[in-house]
Image 1 (cartoon, rainbow, N blue to C red):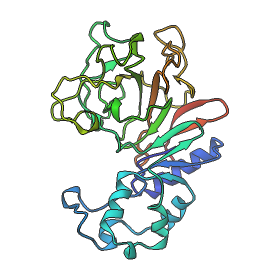
Image 2: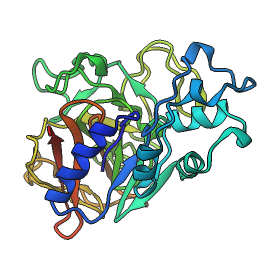
Image 3: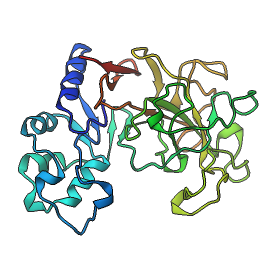
Amino acid sequence: MLADLHGRPGALRRILAAAAAAGADEIVCLGDYLEAKVPRRLHDPSRFWPLERVVDPDPALWARLAGIRRVLGNQELRIRELLRPEQVPADLAVLLDAPERDRLHGLVGLHGHQIRWSTGRAEPVGGPGEPGEPGEPVGTAADGSADGRALLVPVAADVPRVPVVVVGHTHQEAMFEIVWSDTALGGDAADGPAVGLVRPAGMPGPAGMPGPAGMPDPAGVVRTLPPVEPGRPVAVRLDAGPSGGGPSGGGPFDTGRTDTGRFGAATLVVNVGPARGKPSHWLLYDTDRGEISFQRAVR
């Protein structure tokens, strides 16, 4: 799985070669495989642009992408808005016709533009009470830090309530655990504490409702998980969330909870790094073993 190629044919070649060497049976691109050239400040859905002003024509790249399973990202949606249907060549039209989310052998894949990403404060793994760690400020994805404290954090209310969600969009490599409020700490949605990700000023609340800074997200607690070494497999449990060993006695991503709610107690959000750079980030999903691993293609 890859995301955020942004029209880089060299990066795609690197990842396809690395995936073939790893024995991958299927390639999935989680959006933003193309690049909309029109600046956002000039983006007006009521105005149409010449094709070459919207996207670089690249039939060779488009042909390669056509053979890859895809979900749409915000770049593809922008390109669709900026061109009349009659302007779109057939080989480009194929790439603009894809779902915005897909089920991928038990996982749910989407680009991630459907989710609000907070630069507020997140609760680290281990929960409150660990000195010096709760509420560490979270920076922007542009910081490029891999220490779990310079990341964009997903707003729980926008994340599908399924065991594992894989996304791109933020150009960061990270994993998060969302413990849903009706199961967090053994509480109940009706009478449990409103714990969760703190919203920064100006960020709307769930369902678009405005909320003041510091108001918890009532949907659930978002925790950043420790960085994972590239190439090291991480087991995922598709019935109730991540698995592997952790603060409650299991492996590093074992929440120690069981599936007590209708949709499960926790969701693992896996954020694939950007494919467009060098190294080119991608994710290997071993469906037989139920394992994922972060990968990087350098040549």
